[in-house]
Amino acid sequence: MIKTDNIRRIDRLASEHCLRKEDYLALLTTCTEAEDAYLAARALETKEAVYGNKIFIRGLIEISNICKNDCYYCGIRASNKNCERYRLTPDDILECCEEGYRLGFRTFVMQGGEDGYFSDERLVPLIKTIKERYPDCAVTLSLGERSYESYQALRKAGADRYLLRHETATPAHYRRLHPENLLWENRMACLENLRTLGYQVGAGFMVGSPFQTEEMLAWELCFIEKFKPDMCGIGPFIPHKDTAFADFGAGSVEMTCRLLACARLIHPTVLLPATTALGTMHPTGREMGILHGANVVMPNLSPASVRKKYMLYDNKRSDGDESAQALETVRAAMERIGCEIAVERGDRAGSDAD
Ligand code: 5AD
Image (cartoon, rainbow, N blue to C red; front, side, top):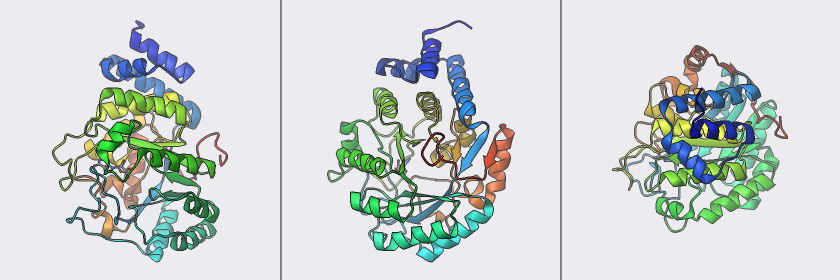
């Protein structure tokens, strides 16, 4: 093969796991189709060296769409009057876990808006109950920004992992995606606190969000190099009709896949989901993500009655392949691309819990 500049960059990334920002920018913006295919192949090879052909599954339970925040991009933002609000009770959540365990899930992700109802007093006994009933399972929380003391109480109760996307590594960009009261610095402090407390920490960002430049995407890769999150959620921005960003275009599947591949090469053991947003943008988006180095899928375990209400963006997939009941469909889709779903917790290789 002719060693073009981009092929050299990809080889260097695969062996040294870091590049200069300018080289990331070149990779993201000047790859030819053949170079993209080489990038994907190197990412896939790297994933297989660490995780084989195994894909980890997470049962996603969307516990509440009530949120005190007003993020400009998000369909469940506080000021969206068209959003029909719900919250699950602890008993509803335990039922989801029971169903999930039976289906083969060994990680439960409780995700929700920043809903004051889910105080530490309510969450601590719930987490303890889940861990008692399913000692072989991991509990992941994705409940936004909370105090150090709260993260500590939830960790002590047994929570193993926490997902908190940083949304953008560029503070000035964060300003344009969020109202004044939400600070990039707080977000970063939360991520640091979670790490100090011994959680496996998930960060992440949207691709193609309003005002994002390609240079900012290059900075995202520098951020992954530096912070080394255990998990990293990377998905395309998709507009929601009831938000300030309704008229912006969606992020691209190709760019998302390129970023996934780079993330895999930067941090070979990282847990990388093929996101629901990617599956929403393209009928085989999730498979494309897997073929670019992703190794996690997160089917929806929420009760069918509330699924349509957790609408972060327009047309968010929650049925078909996204539903846990259709796990067999997911399994078949994964088998078609040579992958196998693993019935295990699926900790990051080399992490303390591994
Ligand atoms: N498009 C894509 N992703 C979105 N999220 C929220 N709104 C959107 C949107 N319109 C993502 C954010 C958040 C996660 C739960 O969902 O990154 O952290």
